[in-house]
Image (cartoon, rainbow, N blue to C red; front, side):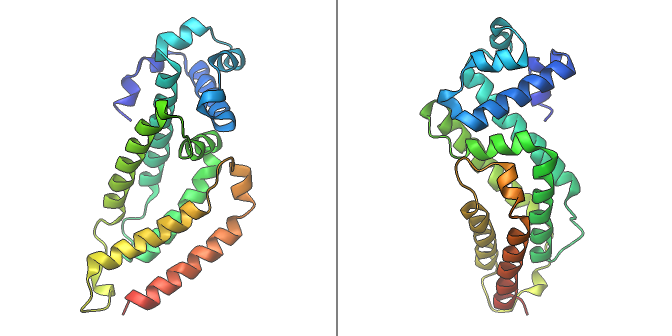
Length: 211
């Protein structure tokens, strides 16, 4: 976030900046990159087009900044609340899954925007978004797997492959629940099902790989 906070948008008054970023994220989340115009953003945010381009240069500059800002905001809060004292990786991952559900309601506009960005196909921004998303996933994976208790796993197995299977399974489950156009209100309706199903997967993984 330190690098982001040096962006000149942070010289804008807080309330105006927050309004602009929230409006832009909501518009992009609803309509996608191509169909969202800077005119509708500045109209609702009540700033001039000149001011918008002064801060971001282009619509692409605005969109890519928003993705990095949104992702960083979520992950900072996420890391701050992770219980790294829990060394059972399956328990840790379950708590992380529940934390993610909590954060969706804390940052609704951010989560809607980030979710929509994963499905963005416009080549003007998709390549950069995909690259940043991949880097963020591997950084998160390193953090998640710090100091886990390897003695919990069955002996005579390839521990790294087991960990890979656990990560791919739970990541795959999360990705199958996402779909283009799905918003926070849609996810909220299914929280209980998500928790039940993630617990079922964790039970299977624990039975297969733990002593």
